[in-house]
Amino acid sequence: MKKIVLLLFILAGPFLLSHAQPKRILLEKYTSAFCGACPNAHLIAEELAAAYPELILAFHHSSVDGMANSNSTEWRDGFGVLGTPMGMVGRSGPGAGQIAVLPHLWEERILEQLNEPAYVGLELRGSYNPFSRMLSLDVAGTFTERPPAGELRLNLMITEDSVIHAGYGFDQSNYFNDVEGHPLYGLGQPIYFYPHHHVVREIVDGTWGTSGVFPPQPELGQVYHHHYDYFLPWNWNQEKARLVAFVSLYDEQNLFQRQVLNVVEHPLYALVATAVEEPESQAFRVSPNPATEMLRLELPALTHRVELLTLTGQSAYAQSVRSEKHEIDVSNLKPGLYLVRAYTAAGILVRKAAIHSR
Image (cartoon, rainbow, N blue to C red):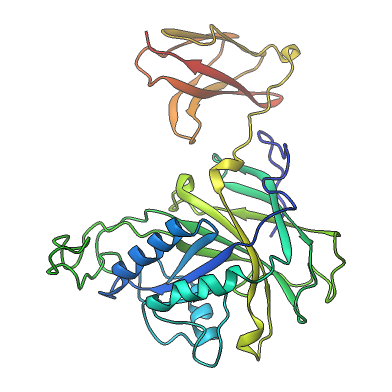
């Protein structure tokens, strides 16, 4: 994908995770809005995640769901997953047909995986621009123990929480609607406006990850890097998206050579960087700051438009201007931090402005 230069946001700060990363476990569940047992399996997965902080959840949806995508369908076919709700822990199992298993076996697999080495520490750094919806991400992997033999792949998933829509492919079938005492009792059959969590929206760079990042025998302590640029589709809730990065083995012919060695997860919105503030010589000033009633702008010559936006990119004010001085009535806006943008002959300039209640 073509690399995008972000004018308003910068790559800054330390890596989000340290080299001394502990072992973490990836639980991938195959689910469907048409599966009446699936919401109960979701509750089981959430209870396991609460009991084991090392557990990271990612739910692949059936090809008939409104949240279907080609990556999840290829993942299902590649592992020969037979139905829902099946799940795999670390993409490993003791024998044929035992990689994807029913929920009552998930905890046993989690405990087995926790006894495995971490092998590799993963670190993320980068930026996300909520206006252009461009993600610029660097992933670094450092091996602390010799990994199992085989081709190593770097994987980047994007998941989304609370995907809520009404209608075919989203309303959740519920076999427990009439089971008194069950958490799903009385919620409906189907459950309308059901919040689908941990939805796998995309596996960046292909279902089986990025090849060529790591050599066949990586050196211990050596840092291996890869960069991803990705545009987040407009219909995804960017504030509820998460990045799931992991290292796995991959053998096209052998299901038992696809296990996940280690995994990390981080909220996408944690990568929203601080807006770059241009030098005062640019003659773009905002006062008072914080403001309660009127926000006064001193603008560079040839400024033709100003905007006031929330940190999530929602427009609070927009106006064409012809003067180097401009005022914005902010008395009716919600208190918080806003971005003031000035469209000038030299480009788009940005200032931060705090709005307080009176």
